[in-house]
Amino acid sequence: MNWRSARAVFGHEMARFFRTIWQSLASPVLSTVLYFVVFGAAIGGRIQAVEGVPYGAFIVPGLMMLTVLQQSVANASFGIYFPKFAGTIYEILVAPTGWIEVTLGFVGAAAAKAVMIALVILVTSFWFTGVHIAHPFWMLAFLFLTAIAFSLLGFIIGLWAKNFEQLQIVPMMVITPLVFLGGAFYSASMLPPFWEGVAKLNPVLYLISGFRWSFFGFADVPVGLSLAAVALMILVCMGAIRWIFLTGWRLRE
Amino acid sequence: MRPIIDIDHVSKRYDSGTVALNDVSLQIDEGEILALLGPNGAGKTTLISIICGLVVPTGGTVRVGGHDIRKDWRAARKLIGLVPQEIALEPFESVIDCVRFTRGLYGEPPDDAYIERLLSSLALWDKREAKTRELSGGMKRRVLIAKALSHRPKVLFLDEPTAGVDVALRREMWQVVRELRAEGVTIILTTHYLEEAEDMADRIGVINRGELLLVKSKDELLGEFGKKHLTVSLYEPLRALPAELAGRGLVLSADGRELGYAYDTRAERTGIAHLLAELAERGIAVRDVSTKQSSLEEIFMSLVEEETA
Image 1: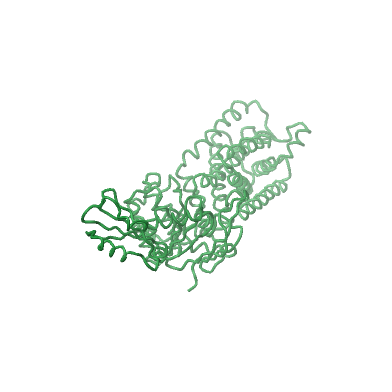
Image 2: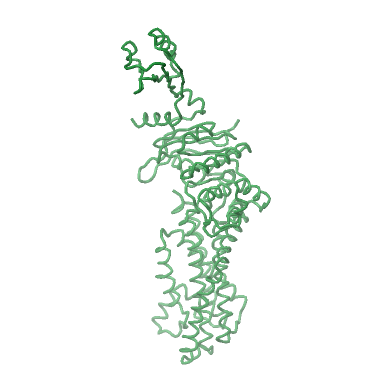
């Protein structure tokens, strides 16, 4: 394990983020503001409070999760795909750097960026609604763990992708629907029993539920199950990445 | 002395059945410049890529500094720097950040004094804050060299470093190579510019169709395979070659003022003395005599053609 290598990759990726900091922040903040305006102010007033939480505040964890998931996948997949596309991946492959260092660097940076953007969204939400965080430690823990889990998934997508279309298709076709159907804007208990059962097959529901619990103290599924889901996802993704690097699949000839 | 690179029966066969390298063995000594020559698709880049870890061989072993590139890959790769054939740089990154990144990637602590020396030696210090996309092609290639040297490797691979580079820049690049060699860096380069391999390399390896045809010191190669060409300038032009001199491979120039004669330096009798004596005997006055050794390019072409035939 070479920490300097991991730090070099992390620093390199963060530098890319800071080079375009305003673009990186402007788009997610703007779309979140629009969500607040539409769902919080325009429609939210007509929706009754969920478990005593006004609807505008209720959607804050879901919006943060939506952003974290999208940003984690996008950052990590682009982070590793771009060197493949530009041809600079060679220096990572010829360096005395193992898969753990490379993954730590890329995934750590992607997760860090996603968490920063999510926190900016949290701060933005204070302008629109009063949000109380019941368990701040667990809020940050869920935020980081989810960011790491989905950055790992994004990293796999970036390693797998052969072109920009493939890079975008998984986030568009899989991640966004899972988030919308995972209870970002509603509680699973609001669904009819059959659909509530179907929703519980969606892994993202467990993440959003745990995260919402850290804000409001109530959840669709037990918090332990949410933690187990995110831990399982991290382990499965790590295993897949290890396999990719050790076999050289789509990396080495 | 133990070679710094020991390639032992290395092969690479792709799933498609294409054999990119076939049972290649080669030892490279520390501090030498080895030029690998071969036509496109001969296997030069595959060989370099295997040593550097970009391509996994299907057979054989490679040791760098005594470390097996697969079992002890971290130690082996620390000794290697690679300048790839294609220019690949992050377009929006500054030159100095690019080089610092590679050094970090190799697990080396920051060393700004060394980076400054390195960039200065490659005439890049003034451009250190420039984004790589703003640089000329030659400068980009020098940035790649700086990156490859950022962790002070003992072995530097230059994969066609002067491809598509203008003459002035090419000379500049070879100057850089000479300086590196003076510092004790072992250099393995592939090139299409044979005259430069002739000028730079200590040893030359010829690869064709995945086979290493030969590896010899440059002088040995030129001596062994080199043909010489003798040109005899005449005082008076000849209308035709005298019948007695026909059948000896002599060629009369169009203006009748020069006689050309190709001979093998390895032959026991080159026939030159006999030829000159006969010319004198026939009263053909000789103004001047000059010889020219065949270039590496001609040797290379004849070797590859021989193999293809």
